[in-house]
Length: 303
Image 1 (spheres, rainbow, N blue to C red):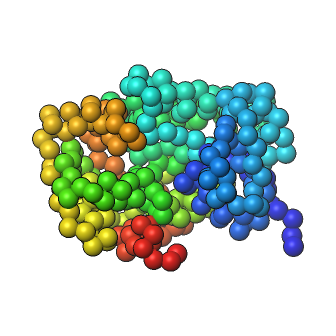
Image 2 (cartoon, rainbow, N blue to C red; image 1 turned 45 degrees about the vertical axis):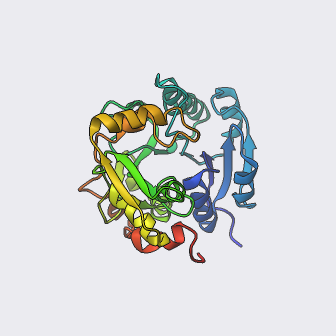
Image 3 (cartoon, rainbow, N blue to C red; image 1 turned 60 degrees about the horizontal axis):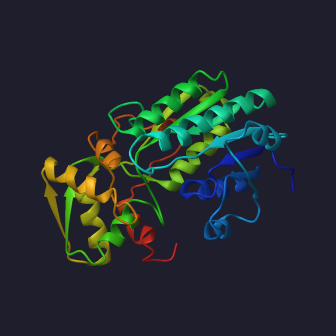
């Protein structure tokens, strides 16, 4: 067998997108090292045995410099959707401060290629999540590294935080009250997102570019919930809430187990997560319709 073409270091490689990306890069004969602060035992079992896993302080430049030796490219998938409290400090630490340490270490070690996960609408609106994603993008653009930015809408696939999360909520709820039920999304298939990263890594023409990654279909939040219920054969209804009650729902959800919705989620929902431009096409990826794959997403059929 030919030798691996390059050594890729992935931060956040045990997560939802990361596991798919690891598999695709391994098929490209890349040598993969996954870096993590700490790994849930279940997630560790899901990670391919052909990838190396190193656990340590991903915010420590000295540790990062050590693991960057012999690395050709870095993929940063680290991100959170919720934080403890509502100060923005958690988002700032994960999305910005850890990135600062990574950029510093990459410069010191002469590793120039960086593929950075961001989010559609990064830098707009009032949510701490989107604000911190926007600041991270500014850091990447100013880094003088050979960067590519990826800005997906909500990402769909088996075990996702969208359809699968609503599937759990709908298990016992015949009626689901919902704020911002008309907020619109373009769910993008997780395999398409992973392939976009692979294609960008293989083609230097994508350096210093940012790409909005969206699926072919625009769906409201209410339509996503109803499609999830229909795929299960459940009779469920969505009760759209006026903004005042939707905001109250988010205030309460902040303190419920599992944090089904937070105040910061509510702020993010004020902007539609859609795009008229689809970077998947520019990256050579044909967008996958998500709805026909709902049975697969929900684990109703064999993959």
